[in-house]
Length: 148
Image (tube, rainbow, N blue to C red):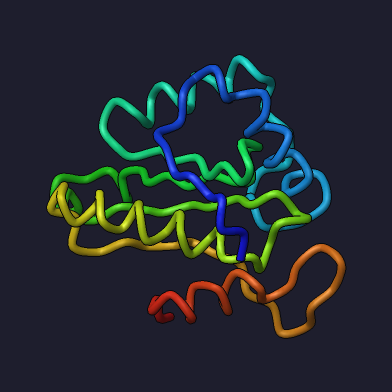
């Protein structure tokens, strides 16, 4: 694992770099559940909206943005106020380096402080892995203590 990892709150000015990490997930995989890559302005608005209520964290490895994670409302009804959906995206070349674990540990700590008692990761699963969908996300979440 890269020892020079810093976790910080995302800034709307990070949008273009975060979008460059996100774009290959949209274009080349079934992971994001999106068909079109959002434009930089829309992506920046997503960051701003999320930060009004939820954590949005960035991991920097050697001062280069390596990934990000955030939470958002789960379902959006009052009965789910103590639950959140969690998302994470890591620069492809830096996957499996421990950055994702560091991001999740930080965001889980913030979520506990916000009295969130359940975090849900809405992830893809496949019986037959291919170039568009693997079970890496399910494996990562399993290692982090999440369960189906």
